[in-house]
Length: 367
Image (cartoon, rainbow, N blue to C red):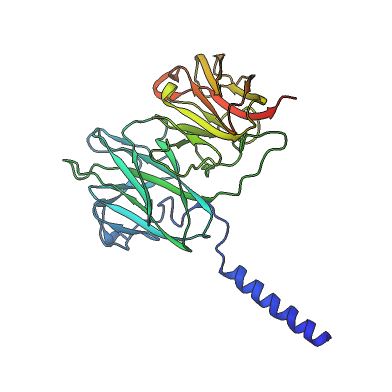
């Protein structure tokens, strides 16, 4: 009997170790050569153009892909590469791709630095097989290092081919999106906050944030991103909202918050479970990110038939205030929505869009 139990234990250990060996690790960081600091050999470069589809380490390229350095460029243009020295530029119909091992059934979020390089409208298509989004990047939201975006997908296979593609056809074939860093994060399952019906109300679960430099991460409206990189929340507007972290910005509580940078074109919402005719209290915190965003700010909040406007006179010092809204549920599902009533830019940088910060959203029944 003892021998039988020992053999069972050995067999169980082998099965468990084999299963764990086949699972990919938890991902939260740069993709292999995601910062493009490992460049092609000199023999595979013609000036800045990469020759050969496997010449860029860890990536496969198609079409006109350039390996460039940040800083002033010929013609007076400036390429922002804030997280290193090198980046890639995608010309007409060009793409870069990489196979990534993932866990089927999990949500993953890609975080990447992307910006336009010419005055024309530019689009960046990010995709895995069966899921894609076209990101309009002609609008610059940051002037101090380019913009950073997040895009989420649902893993259905053990290996996904992550592709960044320029679908545009410009008169200048060298125009196209610039990519300077690409990271991936496996999104953990959401847990309810004790005492609150709102999920992820503190925005602690979100996309990867680059550690060495961050202007915030732009979260696109649901028209471009069907799976939200901010679990529990819907970006239901024309403009993105910005995910900011406590290392680079002032946030009210915890590690992260949301900055509403697009005025009435930038809204964030969540649908919560409620009991019809029961009263609830929605509480939240607003303020500024201590990033030079000055002015008279107002955040509007909606729940059921109720609304509240919360003013905040920002001096750009990272000050915050609490607010609340009492409402009566009309059905088993209630949408709570927040947006900024006005447009804002930094006091000394009118090209840098900013806005009020939202954090610590809670909903609880009123007894």
